[in-house]
Image (cartoon, rainbow, N blue to C red):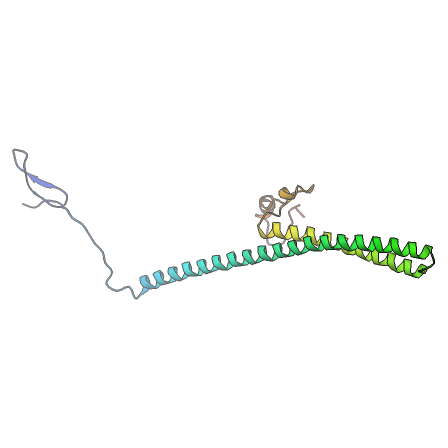
Length: 178
């Protein structure tokens, strides 16, 4: 007696005399190397992605390190320029006193004033460098944004721009419809 796969031959008393189960296994005998080539390609793609992640990580580390170094240098320059200004003010006061008693000329006073002005200009420049370095740190760690800086400007929303231009013909119209 023949039975279909998955069915059983049962007697009158309900006992099973035989059972069979069918399964089909397909193994390609020859695929021309396509399967192994796809596996190798995917492994290489994974390796490339890992390398790109490592390169990106190293780039970020380098940017943060450089920004931090510039920040520390700018801080030290600000402190040094404060001392230069204090020294230039003291020197100017001394030159003015010496001029009053006839030991120095007006040209000496003007030179001392020029030195003080140069020191103040250098101080302003070093304070600017400090601010730029602090923004470079924020940029390097991904925190330089309109929200973070609480800027009073309209925030750019790329989704809105995309929705405005997604159905436009190539370069024929702008978001405002012209």
